Amino acid sequence: AENADDQRAIASITKVMTAVVFLDANPDLSQEVQIARADVRNASVTYLRAGERVTGNDLLHLLLIPSDNAAARVIARLYPGGKEAFVEGMNRKAFDLGLRNTTYDDPSGLSSGNLSSAYDMARLITFAVSNERLAKVMRTPEYTFDTSRRRGVRVRTTNQLIRQGDMDVVAGKTGFIRKSGFNLVTSVRR
Image 1: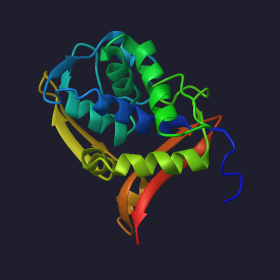
Image 2: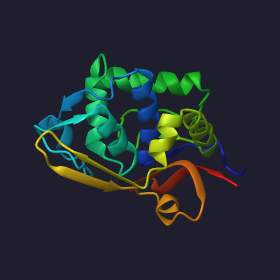
Image 3: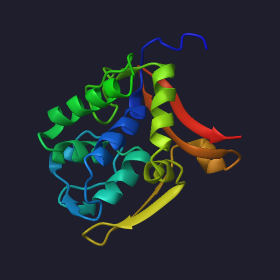
Image 4: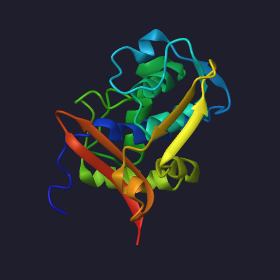
C-alpha cells in the first residue's frame, strides 16, 4: 500500500458507517417514519418529500443504493439523542473497530470534516460485509418502494461495478464531494 494511512475527505462513503450504527441500534425496519422538512432541505440528493412516511427498510436502501442524503438525516434524527448522539455513536464505533484515522461530524458525507484513510475504509467494508443484511443492500442494483402517499419510487445504485455486473461485488459504496473527488470502497469476490 502507498499512503494507506493518509486522512482524506470520504464524502458519501460515510454512509457505510451510518448504516452500521443504524443497524446496531436494532431498529424495527418495518416501522414507518415521517419525513420532516428539515430532512430534505439542501439535501442535494434525495428521493424523499416532507410529510411522507417510509419504512426504516426503505431508508436503509435509500441510504446505500442512490446515496440519499435526506435518508441519512432521518436516520440520525430518529436516533436516541438525535443527530449529535448519532455522530458520537459513529465515532465510537470507528474507535471500537480500530479505525484510527477516521472521524465523523455528519451522517450523510456532505461535510468535508468526515475523514478517513484507505486502510480504515478497507477495514470498515470488511466489517460491513460480515452483516449479510447490510452487504445485500450494498450490492443491490435497483430498489422500488411506495411512500405513504402511494408515490412509487425507483432508485438505482451509484456504483458502476454493480450496474455493469462484470464483477462479483459483495458490497460497495461510492461518494463525491468537491473536497474528496470521486471515491469508492468495495469488496469483490475473485
